[in-house]
Image 1: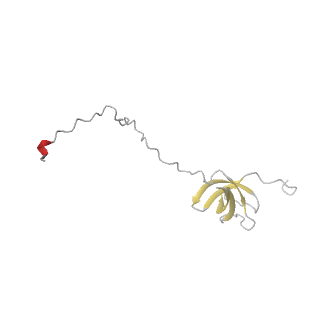
Image 2: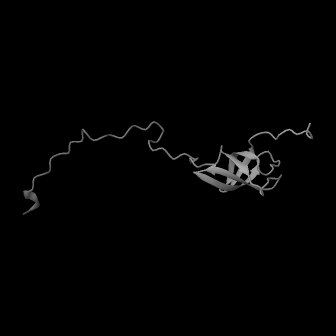
Image 3: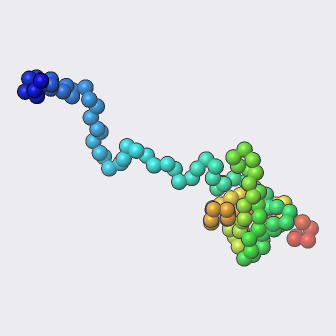
Length: 114
């Protein structure tokens, strides 16, 4: 059998093939968000008993996330100090395991501070 004995295939019907959308400056493929659902930013945490945050020093906080509690190194966003067992809010992530935090509530007033 020779090639000349075969008939040409029928032409393709492309009327029902979906056409690509026209570009309007945005990609139809969206990139993933920069912050994951497990991001510590905006979450509450607590300064550990032995990890008090002092000016210019790094302390330790425990942040509830991902169904558990994770420990992170932390610095005070205001540059001050935060005592052990105080509740904090995560403001930013400096490095993979280092956070920038601030007090969740103002310090309690005592008779000495009045």
